[in-house]
Image 1: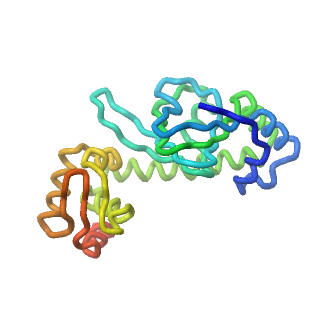
Image 2: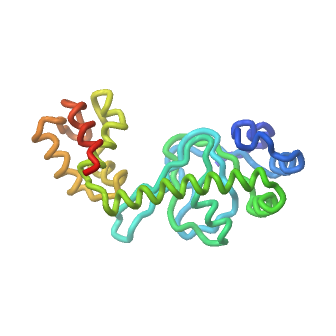
Image 3: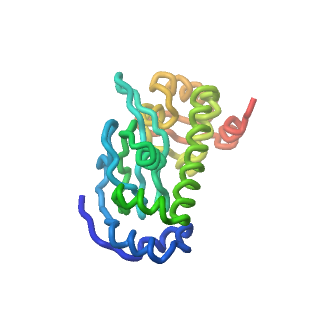
Length: 225
């Protein structure tokens, strides 16, 4: 991991446009811009949280992994976003309960925990930004948990396929990768994909899914009943 001082990163976050002058000065002096390669762990479950991260470029995947190796992707942190789990750990002084991994080269701002707490007390603009981001991400996370617990897998799978490169004709992804994305297991995903194939919606090859009837698949993904 490499780091460097950058003074203009605040401009990349419109919600911080009206940041108080003293808060902006404090953040730019204390924050470090870090560069991480693809497939780099940003944090592990059980780690203490030492800084507040804001992603400038790239994507960080946040996931949980059970003792038997099953993984569920909770959310992704894209450019311009903060990590709700990091926020929760800093506010509650608790360790991470999931892991974060870079899906691409990532550039992010790391604000030391001491400065984060100081600014949360003194800057209403930063405080509003943190809690608005936290609330939006928490809402999305609750919707994900509801879908995993109560949603029909065929609808969720069809919806996911239609939102990805499948819409362009082909998706390069294994059944296990799809299972992780949807919070399921490979065997269940495989059965549902084969059912779609049996109905002529797609064609399965090793590590590749080819679209045959995107219109019907979109209709399944829109079914709320």
